[in-house]
Image 1 (cartoon, rainbow, N blue to C red):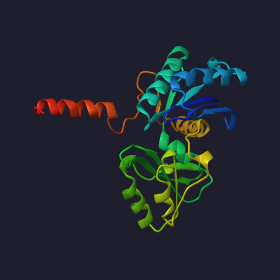
Image 2: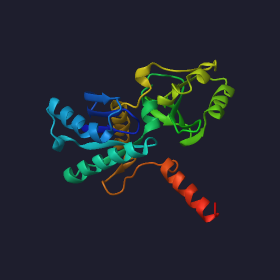
Image 3: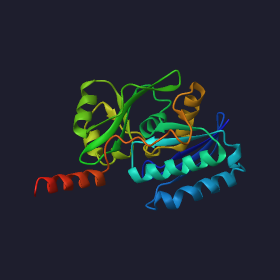
Length: 238
């Protein structure tokens, strides 16, 4: 079984192909170029260099979020178009469980975080059981200070990972029971996405067609919030 993984939830664009238990290729570009500039050339080059045609792909694993609103839309639109044209199923994987899957050999608790602005983070906690990632709670958005206080109060050892760790590095390092992994584990990886997608496909979890899958938005975009605030001020006569 060949799975194509696509993730555009953060600044890094990631694509990979997993065949059964073998990683065929992985391509990551973490630059300021937009995903609309990066994504299709990355997919096309990766498949060409791997001697794989799109018709050989059995499923597409797509990151549904949370993350960049624009990035998620670009990745989702690309995955949907490829799935529609080639009649390929789509498997939804969230960005926080992709991060968690980077730590598959870690035997302690894992906390994934992504920046949600305003000193808040998107977060979820995980643990590995029988070599599979298990979610300990639902995804939430909360102030970073509240999250670190919560983790510290458990008196358990945690690893906290994700792009947001660098924004709050000093606060995290002040906590004695919370560790930050190496930089290679702090970005979402399409290879980890593919591994989670494969497990979900085998269990028929989060498997969709091109019509019934959509990005995961935990909250409204900043542009939407600003527009609603402006409309509220107009209604209030300000």
